[in-house]
Length: 207
Length: 207
Image 1 (cartoon, rainbow over the protein chains, first blue to last red):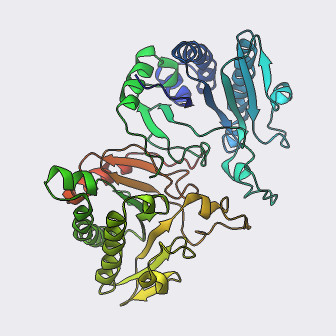
Image 2: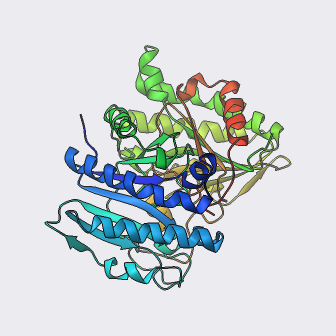
């Protein structure tokens, strides 16, 4: 099976899952950490070299503050859990805003956990306008995310067939696989199905 | 039914259609003009305000020259046919290259056909790097395609679940609907199914 070098992950559906399971919307985010770790181990074992997780966006921070606090906390906790594994973590997002958690600032330069290995990029308070330099007027010769490579495959949970501003440049040639289940209902079969489908796609890179 | 204001069209599969129908690959492109006109009339009647068609990319011009000539000719012919309708046409792409057809240069500023009405954007020798200013070093405060609005819905024919470099900025929040049939096998039901699906999607614009 042809394994993608770099997989992007859009872990959507935490709030809808919470509502369907009779808990408060903001309580859904914490249920996303364990699936993320299972997914990391699975992809590592398959030889995936790089993964990018869509944590939260600057737009997301306009939601009710109880939700904002909950998803920020879940992202911080995810990094704490990951720090006990082998990985190279880079957190990318608008650090100049108060919405960027102080706890994650040490990771805005790539940090090696354990023996290193898989590159993990985690988008935190990310904004595609910021990435492209469209919002702050500091248009430079490089993307803010120039350290993030082209994504081969993007897997999105939660049924929506869109990118929602996820790395517009690195996603130009990505194959997009959508899982209808919500992210907290993650199953390893979702990933095996995505990889089986991906391995049947031809890679043309726009050619 | 909620009708998208702006629909992007990726008319893929002409060559695969040709092979399956026993004609030469390059003969497939000419079969794409009539579906495009049917689609234009259908969307116009539904009240769609703007459509963007992915004609060909700078990357596509690296294909065998007989194919390149065939898809260029089909695009020129499509504009000739459209010029007899009511529309406002804008052609966007790298005009500085020899791959850009002279016949389409008059349309690189928006031109009104008949009584005007629907905006039609036609990407010709387009490149996302060019659009973002990443390739030519002339990084400006605006996209090269700043006159093209955000796309609500993208419909792609030919089964591939990817954007292939199609307007990375205008597609950030677009819903992507994939038709497995090849573009020359266009049916109006493809569009009605896409619109029915689209009208069930929530519009969050990243929020």
